Image (cartoon, rainbow, N blue to C red):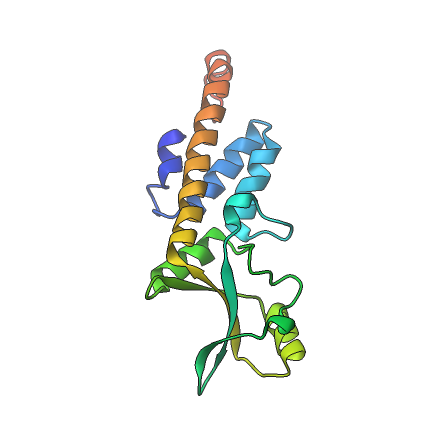
Length: 169
């Protein structure tokens, strides 16, 4: 399993690696690890881990002006400038599309609606503008934790495999 958690060789995606880890962690009874992997794959509804906190600014996109800062008073409560709750795929996409050292992590339609309502403006989309390095650090942290936990689960599963050679772990 440790080999697969570096990156799933079939797809090369960290998302697939997290799915693999989630399945094996759940099978081994490590529900906290399985839940973490699922949150990384699908995004966080609750507060994310501290490695997903980053300085940034909420920006809105207007067709004639491009990306512009959103007035601070218009920030929706769940659109904090310090938490990156999006899925790992979303973060990887933002890194790939980033320019000039900054990436835009797009916010949900509900958050956009709340920002538009509070600002009295009509942005077509809203995002958290974050330094690319901060997003790259999130991906590195997720990759590192995936590798560590897969090694731990594999090491703890070794005695089970010795007793039951057909075990999937």
